[in-house]
Length: 193
Image: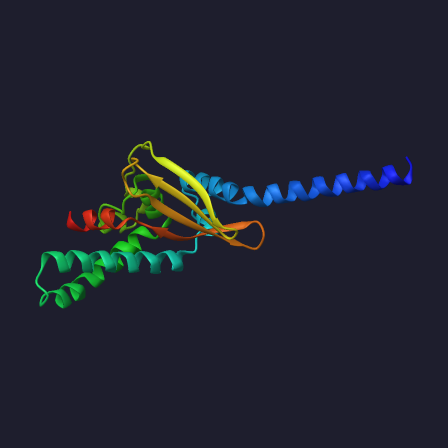
């Protein structure tokens, strides 16, 4: 091999390695979501915890529930009862959040698109008492918002607003579930049940 061929070989090799590295970085959220799904199916709490930022999800869900409760109170009760209603519903919101932001609660939320039917279902010594329905057909879409934010969107029908699982990048190749955006219509419907 002469010097020119040797140089050309190294340029091609470097270009190939860069392309492979970029391709790997591009598919890392898909790999993380696949691993997370396997952990959810097995209910492997340690593995699930490695993919989830529970405090962030807890705060986001509290904010969404409080907003939905406020909507329900304002639309169904007089303005003089609204402050009393928000005081009454604060413990209910905390219980719903505590029941949902667990590995089993997340499994139920992601599979059904709704919060646990009752926060009493997950209390007690046997956390596996929450019955899960059979897997329903859902419309899924996966997409980047930006280089460090990835969305898994799931809805039961085309007309329904999707449940969005927001993943953020940690380092170069790690991803964690940092937020779950539940459509207000789903939250309001569940609060009125």
